[in-house]
Every structure is written in structure tokens, then in C-alpha cells.
Length: 259
Length: 149
Image 1 (cartoon, rainbow over the protein chains, first blue to last red):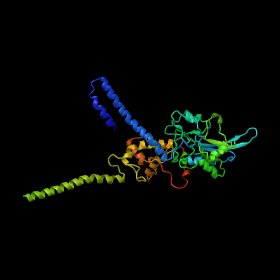
Image 2: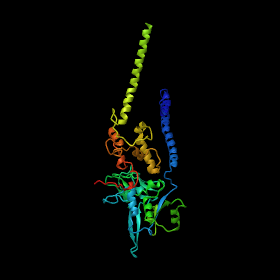
Image 3: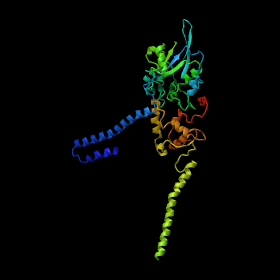
Image 4: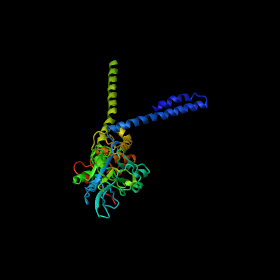
């Protein structure tokens, strides 16, 4: 196809007697060459959404989120942390430099002495600071609101680690082996909670959510914040819930009630 | 006289036909004989026996284009959440893992490693991605990563 474009304008190239004529023909030839790849790009661009829709990729109609009820979260229980480590092949803090995707924190009201326990991880912000600061575009937000690191592009600069107000990201310092098939991880890249994206894409719930309900606490509710009929949307609409560091206006996907 | 010439012509034709057949068949036999044994025949990387099956596309096409196909689909999967593509690394590993090491890159003769060594191209995939298929059955999740000091 490209050859046809080249051959047809090249025939008159020999004929023109004037310099202007030659330039005109040359410009037409260049236009033909440029047009051909352009057309193909458009074809590809039009074909891509059809493929995506057929296999149900991430859609912007959905926004995945979690509602964590700190009243139900038991102090000392670390089932969500263990489940996350097991699911994603994390070592669980054997070395000081090991990754940590989710952690349990205790908060205390100083005046009354009332303590509360809650899990803390990537809050999957709608306006993620980690994405803002990433110099390579490795840190990104999927159409359905899940914030991820594309480790193919990550250069390990750790700007995102610094930018995250929730200390949710870790850097992999050591070479790894025996990674999980669905959770590739490697030295020199930053990582964090993926909201178990490999499970969510299959229509399942994140590992921490399943573990919490298996333990009988049911403190974490996972669902679509954009769908007004979903359980999480109804609860967020009818009961008070908070984002941590609301002042930053990040519109987090993970919300807490009872704090 | 005419009869003798005719019979010698027939004999010549027979000889030529047999010769031509041998020329056509012998290299084909040699090729088919060498391929399943995995022995290096001429300039070919030695590959140990894998789990096998039918490849998702023509092997000659895959040999030349697998890197582009994988790269294209990785972006669809990572950014678009499309996990139903035909050219997934997970599927490659599941099929091409060697029967001996259960891996595509652990030993010198394993599928990916062998050809990449032959072509002097470094594979980056398995620094992060699993080079073994997930163990079938229960509690595959117990396998923890081993952090080397």
C-alpha cells in the first residue's frame, strides 16, 4: 500500500522542468506517505474500544472503593494484613526493607483515652499526588479509579513514596524470586496496594475484604461508589463517613466510618 | 534397435525418478527426525521438552513477533484491565515451562532462556514475572518470595 503511494507520485518527478513543479510533486508525495500511516492509526484506535468492551476492561462508569468501619475492626487482629501478604506474595516484614501494602494502626483520642484500630493502605485517590509527581507516567490511575504502578515504566525514583500522605507505597530494595503469577514484583520499582486488581477484574473481592468477613468482623465493605444501588453507596449516603486527610481534597476511594 | 533405445530410455526415466524422490525426501526426513529429539540441528538453540500443546499462533510468526505482541497486550492488561487477550505471558509460561525444571528460564535449555541465549538477547520479564506456572491445586498462596541478602 505504501509502495503504491510512493510509485504514483514518483512517476511525474522526472517530468517537471521547473524547481517549483518538482517541489509541489515532492510535497504531494510526502502527504501521501504521511496519510497512509495516519489512516491505519485511526483504524487501530477505532478497533481498540471494541476489543476492550468485548472483554470488559476497566470502565470509567465504575469507581471501586472501600468503606472501613473502625467500630467493627478489632484491635490486634491482623487478618487483612496476612491475607494481603499471602495473596500478593509479600514476605510480611522479615527484613526492615520489606514491602508493606497494608498495615494496622491504632489511633487514640488524647483527652478520653479511647483507642480505635483501623487498616491503612493506598486510599486510591481520585486526585492522586503519586500520579502528579511521577516523572515517567508509571504511577497512574485506571479508568475505574484503582491507582497502580506500571513497573515496566517505573524507574524507582520514589517521588511517589514521598508524595503519598498515607505512606502507602513501598520500594523493593532486594531481588525477589517466586513471585505470584498474577502479582509481578521486582527490585528497583515502587509498589503498593493494588486493591487486588487481578481479583477485581475477575469479579472477585480484594483479599483483605474476604479475610475480614471470614474472620467475622466484616469491617471492610468493597463496592462501586458510582453505582447508587450498591451497598457501599447506600451506606456512604446514609451514614457519616470520613476520608483521612480530608483537607487535601484528594477524594479518596477508601473511606472510614466511626472515626 | 528401436526397441533397445526405448527400453534404455525407460530405464533412464526410472532412475531419474527414484533419484529425484530421494533428493526430495531425504532432507525432510532429516528435519523431522531432528526436531522432536531436541538435538541441535545446524543453527538452532537446544530446547528441552516443554509441557507442550498448540501455540496461539504460527510458531514462525511468534518467533519473530512475540515481543511486540506481549508488549502490546501488557499495556492493555495493565492500564485497561483487559485480561482476556490471546498473547499473555502467563499463558506462554503455562505452556512452555520445561518438564524438568517447571520453568521457562531456570535452566540453560528452558524455552525462553535457550533461545535468548542463542540470540544473545537479555530477558527482563522474569525479574518480576513468575517464570513457573502457578502450582496446581491447594494453597499455592503459601509460596512466599525468598529475599536474597
